[in-house]
Length: 90
Image (cartoon, rainbow, N blue to C red; front, side, top):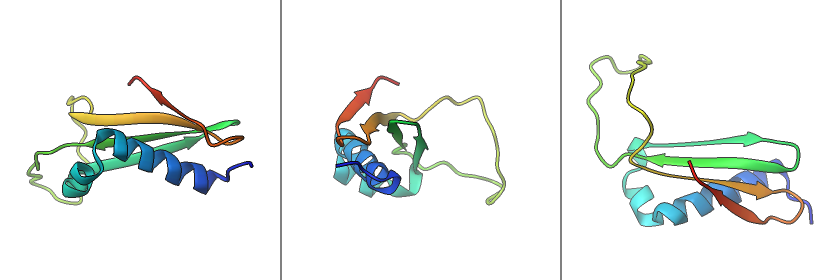
């Protein structure tokens, strides 16, 4: 059974959340980021979590910084052909 992009995305984001800790992700969802990319045979999914809120002096304004990554993150590939999940090292 071939997964659609949406099915693979949902499966991958959920798997990443479970890898980090589902309840932890929900508790810190205000400081979370999810993303995905559609590739020919798979969908790459990513979840990043920061458990500390950061004050933004200019809300709504994009500020780039040299801070790298999230303290907690997970990434995986979901293969469209069979739904298999492969976690990747970030």
